[in-house]
Structures are given as C-alpha cells and as structure tokens.
Image (tube, rainbow, N blue to C red; front, side, top):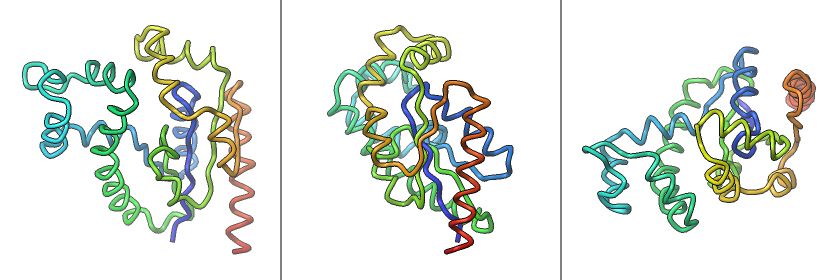
Length: 198
C-alpha cells in the first residue's frame, strides 16, 4: 500500500515546481487542480455548474473560466458551491489513479486546498510549502496575467500559511528553489526511515 504524501501551499508558493521535481525522482504525483480542470470539461460537471451558476458563466456554449473565477473568488459561498461540485469527482479520479500506482512506496497528492477540501484526511504525511507574499503575488500575476487585486482575492479565499503549517508534518520555505528541493530530499529520507520502521 502506497503512503500518500499531501503537498499543499497557497497560490504562487511553488507547489508545481516542487511537484515536478518529485516526479523527476520517480515519485508518482497527482495534481488535483490539473485533474479538476480536465474533469470540468465533462458533461456531468458542466451540467451541474450550469444549474448552480446559470448561463452567465458560459460563452458560446463553452465554460468561461475567467467569469467563473471572478464570481467564486469574490464570494466564499459561491466558491463552496463550486468546490461541492468538483471535489467529489476529483476524489473519485484520485481513487482510480491510486489503484494504478499501488507498487510505488510513496505517491504525492498535490492540492492548493488540501485542508479546505478535507482531502488531507487521506494523507499519511503533509508538506506545506510557503513563500514570501510579494514573491507569490508577482509569480501569479506573471503566470496568469492577473491583476494584483485578482491575485489577492484568490490568496484571501485560501487558508493562511500559518493555518496550513499548524496542521502539517513538514514545512518547506520556498525562497530559493534549490534549497526547497534539498529540504524535500531531507523530508523524503525521514519518511523512508519511518516507513521502514513501520
């Protein structure tokens, strides 16, 4: 049975970079946000989104992600409604994926809202990645072509670093990516020792 390592952190903290590095070490990585994006194309999910949010989030029959994001990141109750549609299908998908990677000693479940979604309950160990706020804002503005205000709305819709760190087994400070990778290697050594003892 694979041990599940939860990897989380706020938007722009460098989760994807670290997840890519984990993959390079041969550790299977499930990126919840990527899976959610794929699953949001399914007829079943689109039907549910339309029922809750109406035609306003559709443009020429296609889901208008930017419009949906501007609604859910401005109103917490709308974000909860969207998460209520997406999380169950992502959870189902992860179960299928996990069955396909049973031979791996460790797998990584990477999610920005690991705690908010309740997914942390399935993890054997949790790593939170943090980064200075201004670095995060700059990264996301550049990556998503977003305004500072849009990025701050998304940051404020998530748990704080302190909240995540309090519930995590390990915290990686991502100020210098090279050092963050070394910190992960140290964590991996600890997890391997614990697994051998277990």
